[in-house]
Length: 366
Length: 97
Image (cartoon, rainbow over all chains, first blue to last red; front, top):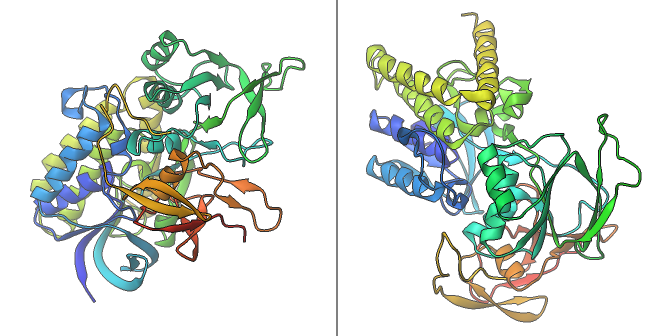
């Protein structure tokens, strides 16, 4: 049975960064991804990112993806695509290659960077074709350049809802409205202003009541919410749409960490159940690490840095870096992560991450 | 509908077109694109009917997680069309079981 130093599961921003760092330090790294191409969700991100230059400010997501892939190839990361993991048994990983061949691999260490999936809300008519995740719409529009419809309703005014709405306009379709159940807009002001300037109305304290249609979405009814989140009678409005996008948050993909026996805890500010990890990104199972959105929903910049941190920590564990060599790099990465978790949005995530680390210390008896 | 012009991504590159057969009808698709993308480019939104109550389902998560977009592809049922690339002559059928 093939034994690899490090198996990285998921080739998005965190997984690529982790694989690059471990490989750079001299470890043998195998990166596994279910998809036909690596890069995770980066290649559908056509907007520019904020932040410092180190964190790709002003650079579009697909360009970050291209750079990470280049770095991975330069550092001889082996990437296995079209490969599904069906089981984790101790240090053995069961995979299916190209849908046909099942086999087991052995890994000295595993880094789970499995990303996130979209949360949903249900309402009468929510299963009709034409109701989809905002991320799903973003994939089909930006990556495959196909519009699933022409009149969109966006549910949720977080950054995903605001950014994807703007991208729908750029693709040439109409966004009839963005609705938000809370009394205020969830995402950054800069994104909200941009979409408003483009003429899209954001209706706060509004919810969806029902979607209508025979074989696909044809119309929708929305209504106002009072301060107790109850529908205001008589406030309903019905209008024609053919796509309804759900942008109501993300949750970490924790199925594989759970299978590996990693303990989780519920942290709303990180998206729900999150694998408990220490300041090296190591979970409650020795030798198993998490990185990126899989370790709590954050941003591309934090995903990359947490991936690098996991990659360095793994290289240290395997003896490719001495304690001293790893120390400075890890301290620096933690400082960068701390900086990135600033502002009102970031602070909440910073506290949640601290809770995870405290819990890990408690469980590990440190 | 295909997005031919885009302010950030530019004009749609010319890519290799192939024929696919969807419920007996010949349609044009781009080789390598997900089946779901080819169908929606041809304005097909309903991919599947549920087994018992025959309710329509379509593209939903776009990343192979939800299995709402499953169809019968070259005789194989339960194929996730959002992550399965189109190949030349592919036979695609609405799944109702």
